[in-house]
Length: 152
Image 1: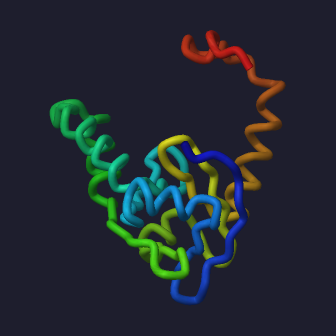
Image 2: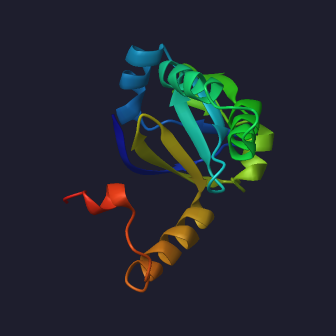
């Protein structure tokens, strides 16, 4: 399980250093083999260990191409999925198309999300986080059924 928040720099070649606390685990469960793709719900990236991505691909394959939302999710997630490898310094290269999609330039944040990481531009994350926090107390929407049962 991956959890936690880290701020990282992006070098001039578009490489991101994965925080050291995650590197050993990624090496153990994925041999350093990862898959990056776009998050079709937010303007950020998802980074999966290869073994976790293979589970996602199985789930995507089970979706019908005759359902428009399913087809779009497959097109976005599989279409932009890119294999990457941790280098000897624990870095990965974020492909330019994905960096552009997520507006990642010099600073990024990595959020552990259980089976994957989210990678945001630092500015986009701070803006989105602040918006969500503002809306938290002013949102009249009823919590979803799964959220209603969550006890924190």
